[in-house]
Image (tube, rainbow, N blue to C red; front, side):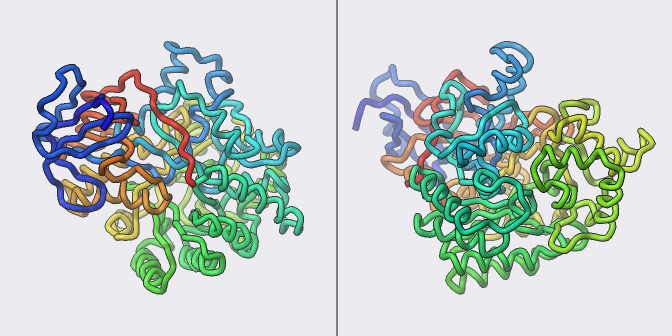
Length: 550
């Protein structure tokens, strides 16, 4: 073994496999772990740094399988956009966003979810796609990349607190080849999408994602997705899907996802599985057994979940899909017209075949503004209340808000029921993903609280999960799903990504009012052998890297 650079000693090891906790010391050398017998780390070179884990639990670094943090450490990102420099308010706000996952023990994030990634794109489509990504990610002119290699090169090591892998977003892929038209791709366009996807997966992208409620992904039919998922299957990488409907038609949408998996041969990952809106409450009593039966029948299907009854997304997703055809510029131009607003109102009231219709399944009173750069005073308030205060119909308020903000508005939707969330969390098929949307403003607290909330509230306090079982959902299970070799399980030779926590104290502190409060009970986090958090506070270490999945 190379010279030891760090010792973690005195703790109980929960290794990520689901096996019972056991006493062990850990030695780190060359960014890799060696598991020692209890007490074996007590002697040796006294100059070696030590993390004292006495009375605490040591786990693998947590893997957040569902994030939207692609642009947080990209060249040309928010610092360049706003002129932010270390020490000023804008910089501090972005650092708070970057630190939120790390402080709860997340050492690897998987971005590019819900069909939105920063790549790939044909060169001639880059300017058009850039506007779409500005609205999606909302933190400055982070340009799209032609392929995964260019995306990886754009990540700034000086800003990377943890590791980042990325899926290939189908919406980005489609826009990068054929724009934002509501039509099937021509054969040459589908071939081009398959070629770009194959290149990105060869370069190390982690799989294919869809967001079938979001334009332009929503314009795709099942056959288009099957063709692309077959490319992922050839690489042995998963098809990861935000279903076409998570509300009243969730069971139909789930069947489409299962059909895509069967026809393509790709492993299926159902993103942030939920049954939202009053017409779907309780449907997890049927969707989870359906997933279990599909798995028993030979389909490799799993899901992920965040531990909250509220979701978060972009505001323009509350509008019918036709409104966004042609891209953000076309959407904003439409919203100026009274007849368009009347049609939107009618479609929300009556529904549109194949459209999820979040507002029609709940109401504007369940939707709060999370981030609106042009109207900061609106953040944290419900759309129904904001509209009433201004004497406006909610649709008119929403259209005006989107126009003022050039489309860049995110929202929080209080649409789920607690018993459904608990069922998915408890399922042996689920792993943990925050679905974090790290934008300034009042983001959903899941970005800063998901993993600590599972361990504390649902695991220890509610007894829904054992400590070993909860950690497995955050480490070993996602490692196997996304082929993150060397991560997620503490064994000899594994990457030294580690968390030291107090199982009696760990809990989330983030709230909807104060969404970035750090958790309690996370004592230390090690990233690639470097101590990135100590005594609950970040160090200067920036050891994160872009992970290539081969």
